Amino acid sequence: MPDLFNTLNNLLESLILVKLIFIVSMIFYIIFLLIVLKQVNSMNAVVSEEGPSATVRNIAILNIIAAIILFLTGLVIL
Amino acid sequence: MPDLFISENKLEKKHQKSSSNKSKVGVLTAYFEKPSGVFFANQEEGEELILFLRRHLITNVPWILKALTMIILPPVIVLILNFINVSIPLPNNYVLIFTLFFYLVVFGYIFLQFITWFYNISLVTSERVVDIDFSQLVFESVAATKLTQVEDVSYHQVGVVRSIFDYGDVSVQTAGTATNFLFSGIPHPEKVVNIINDLIGTEPNA
Image 1: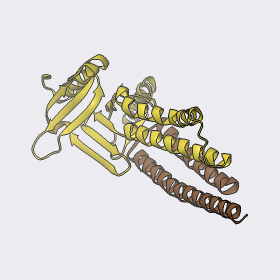
Image 2: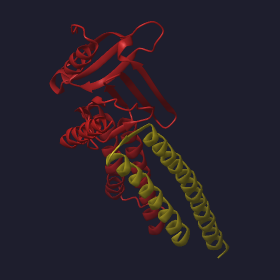
Image 3: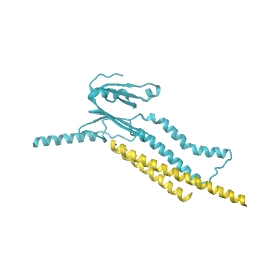
Image 4: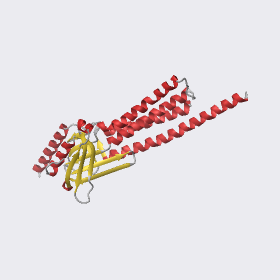
């Protein structure tokens, strides 16, 4: 019985570690995506193409939204 | 004075008509003559864009192959694990979230590579040559030189792939201490050299 308890406890601790790794990775990834968006905006100020520049900016924003949704989903279901 | 006003108006209408006839640059455009709808910082009034250049699309193949490899990696790993009868030591919800995270990172890689290509632009205007460099988020530079300072333009097109897809490097040498330009992997290098030579008024040389 103590063996089973220890095994379950170890599994739970390891899963918490996995969850922590996921949260930290997601935070770093979202920061990275914000830097990407900042650079896209800065490059759009240097050279602007009617249409494509806005498309690229929208994709950068969608990428951030997807990352935030995944981060929140991870927080809820992990 | 009224005559001058009418004349300006006519000129403006002519300009509007000519710019509306031009086509716009697309997301994947690598070579475009006389583009409309493209603007860059410090563009002077009346300065007309003559050439819009990016690296040839084929130069993106290496990172596209890397991305495709990354995309097919998770299913391949699952197949291998099933084949050797080993199960992933994590609950299904963890596997799902980590797989989605992996694909999000792959998409981030694809997007970063794409914008690195997208924002590496070379422009030839009626007055100058502009080279905009952007590399891996950390490097950003804009260099420009007046056409009157351009001394020599040449191109290098070495290799089978470059000959088949008609792309190469164009180097623009400038007078004195001004920066020399290298447009790497751009489509139709011979055409580009001819256009720049026409603008600076010299004979083309390759």
